[in-house]
Length: 99
Image (cartoon, rainbow, N blue to C red; front, side, top):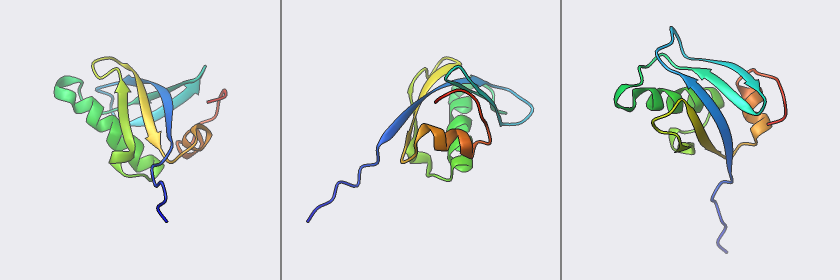
C-alpha cells in the first residue's frame, strides 16, 4: 500500500529587512511575519539567509521552506511544509493576530 508522504504546505506573508545586525523574528502583526536577516540583499544572500533562519528556528530541513513569491522584494510569500501557521508563530517565539 502506497502512502502519500507529501507534506501539506502552509503559506505565510513575510516582510524581510536585510542587512540587519543579526537575524531575528521581530513580530507577527496583521497576518504578516516581520523578520530581520543579517545578510545583504545582493545576489540572493538575504533570501538564502531567510530560508536558513526559518529552517533552523522551525526545526525543519531547508527544502521544507521555499519562497513562492517576492524573490526581489522585501515582501514575500513563504511556504513551509509540515507545520501549521500557528505552530510556526509559536516556534519563532511570537504572538499576535491570527495566522
